[in-house]
Image 1 (cartoon, rainbow, N blue to C red):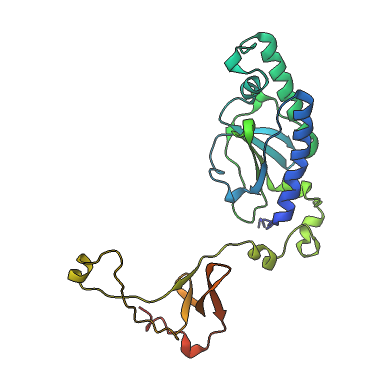
Image 2: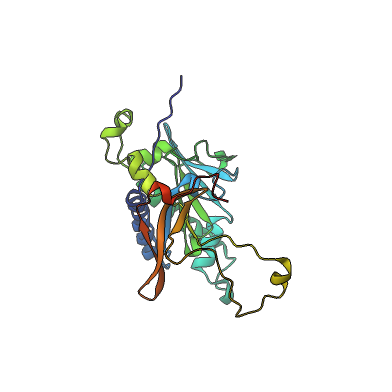
Length: 268
């Protein structure tokens, strides 16, 4: 039976990986006289829109490690526009300019390859493909660039991401002892949940609704001394009281007593 390893990288780990690519990219930009991208985002693959599309090319591979690349426009063409301003007509279509753009792209790929530590795949052998592992807990990550590299993304499969997070294949069998992999509680801490505070439901006659105007006051059945209900999805998580803090509306959460929270049958 095939057992797949569950991996979940924390925000600091993702930021650290992004920083490694940022450094070599900024060094490359300085060498070629280009402005450095404003930001580089590293996210879990399942959180990236279009991660499972079939527009990726195999960019680098070694053993189980794979890196895929996709770009809406040829990176060499993007570099040609970045190195030589098309508005001035400065060597925009010159063969020497195209060669320089190609050399710059090769140098950038070599810088990224140095971070990944795996061999590049010849472009002619790179067919369009879909990432095999891009679901939650897979451990795959996607790097998205900004600025003139905004159309370019790198996909690091779970084995490659794990290697860059300094997890050896032997240590992958012992997840609990590895500080580079977060435990379940730490992973769930990064999950965002909507918390909704409801005053009260109110019923208005159709005639009264048609006659409503700006400035009218609708009286709610909710008493001032009665707490609000904090809803987490369809369930009531706790009670709260409305207030203000530093010029903003605020709520004070209360440890709810069972009699203060209506059952689902009583709650409309």
